[in-house]
Length: 263
Image (cartoon, rainbow, N blue to C red):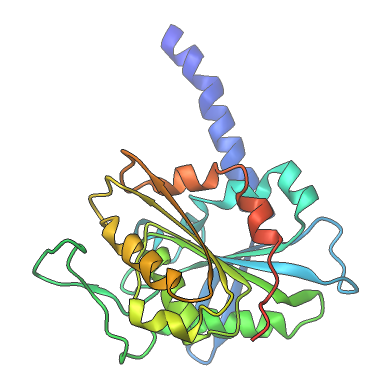
């Protein structure tokens, strides 16, 4: 009985916290023909179309795929719901959801494992359907009053980290800054988007799912450009390095200080 009494307040807090996330991030559907993008959107307090607000798009990992339009809020949503952050950094925040049988990028895992985890990149492949829908949804939002087209930010973790790097080369002029977490990309593509672009990359050096070598090689490639590159590597941290990234005290300030670079 004592254990139940101790656990009950924690359970109550957890349920209330999840309910707050679900209620403040409103369910939205972006429909194009037969295709539907499920997403959650957080709007600024005292939102008005007479003002321009930044737009943040966050791509979840493989574990949050589905059609419930809720699991994608598992990681990262709390950061933007924090009362201090909402007051200090008012923004429109979008968490789209990827279906089970899709991914945010064209990367696939091959049969042969190597120091890069066996990931294979097909840059000639068409962008996955839902990922392309996200891009078109961003375009539709940017065209609306109330959205600052010079302050569109992109982030993602794991599968979403791979997606972040791919979105950048597919739409090099769309984003003002990016923060990929425990992902990877194509070094040969960085020159298409990296001119003065601020990018903060995060990875744990003990990651058994996506080897840290994926981020390290992207950092090396970006350092040869004029990108504003920042890299944080967490010693001993495995795949869930997003927990460390979201706890970085300077992350929010860094994101919202950026504006689209002059090209």
